[in-house]
Length: 213
Ligand code: SF4
Image: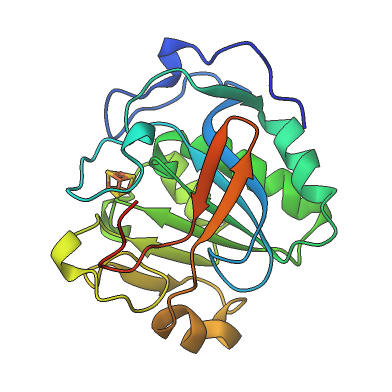
């Protein structure tokens, strides 16, 4: 995949919850990608974390991905091709940061991927609740999503159960694609993974309540 030196523009950062993109910017502003992880849903998954989140949950483990700042600008079509070409993945997980703040471009990404890999299931983590996702781009992204795990992280409600950070967050099975894994998803917390990178480490997964990073 080509990660351009070009930085995302300041205007990529939405300033309101109902921000409408007047033209489709082909670039996602990403915090990180992981082309192979088993810590963020059933099977082997391609994980994408976006940069920028409007929330500031106490205990967030990804505070460096909260600011709406320029990070890695990745063209949607390039990322789609990178996912399509991974024959070893079973699904895609979108997290962040807040995916809904780049919902239009992520929806396009999923549309491009599923045109060629319709068997890939999609999990999206969002700090917004499903009821709050009323704007067009968010609804479009949800339309490509098989499981939405919604709501902000509440540290004292981290019970170590299931694929969610805290018990206030809800599992919304929006299609039947992930229903065979319902028990695993809602009850079992996967081990976190530490990926060694050239310039540091990447933690994938949802830490248990007493985890110290
Ligand atoms: S919604 Fe997620 S990324 Fe955003 S502040 Fe809360 S825990 Fe962190």
